[in-house]
Amino acid sequence: MIDAAHQRRGFGRAALAACLDYLRGAPCGAARFCWLSYEPENTVAKALYESVGFRENGETCGEEIVSVLAL
Image (tube, rainbow, N blue to C red; front, side, top):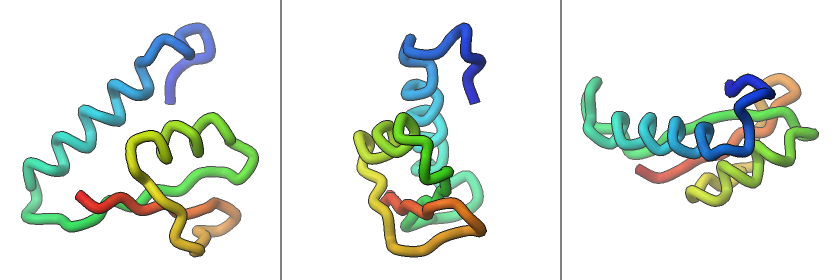
């Protein structure tokens, strides 16, 4: 999460890229996929995740939408 005062500066995208790079480095062993979830009304998060390749898989986690990215 990025504080509202610092949003729209690319920090979230940079943080997401760093996290994905870390996971691709297999710190806990090889992983084929990364899953995340977000609230349906959070269209900004949805657009960010889709822009890096996450795709909704039709599942939910509680009230949140699940998206998956092949690593």
